[in-house]
Image (cartoon, rainbow, N blue to C red; front, side, top):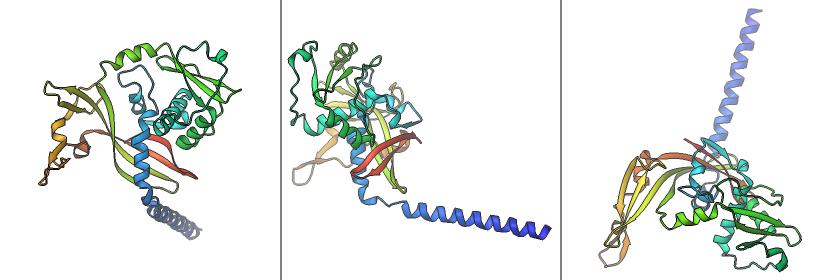
Length: 282
């Protein structure tokens, strides 16, 4: 009986080892499965990630909120964030150039300032960016958020207009000199996703009397932990042919990668490309 138990135990261990080996081989095979798409995925992150929590009356206009959670799934973002992201990306990509919406003037009489965006456009962009099947609805801004969204089902259009927080936000723009900068450093693949490690820096811009700009990069949003600073004059140099070129010797965020906080952004493969899925602090 003891011998039988030993055989069973050994057999169980062998099975577990085979399963573990199989998982390791699968993961190794998937490590660079989407290598040809890394540049596309990283560009999507640089172009669009900072929209996901923007639109608040804060020091960084809400973009800092994205990095306050240790692990955030984007499907759990507020509806106002999903809507604002879709509209912002749409406007950046098209500048509203194809917008043709006719709403009865009586419906718009109560709105002093507004923009109109087709509901179908919003739905398409939320699907494209987040892979979420959006159901149209009107959204009133939460505290500190600067937009309201009224959905007009008769015309399949969103009427987007300022909230009570917009005036304070607008006033801050005059003296605004801070931003958040993200820099992708590596990407790897899993079975259906690309995981991209990014560096997050908090920067300030100060204009000098000689019209150059000092740029400071901090580790923290409170701007207490300075990592490095550069002058805008250092960004470019003149080569042997008297052409202005980028200065390869200038300090960059990548050169100080160990001094900044890092996050992993997961992008998931869809039929149309890659959707933004989550962000996790390393």
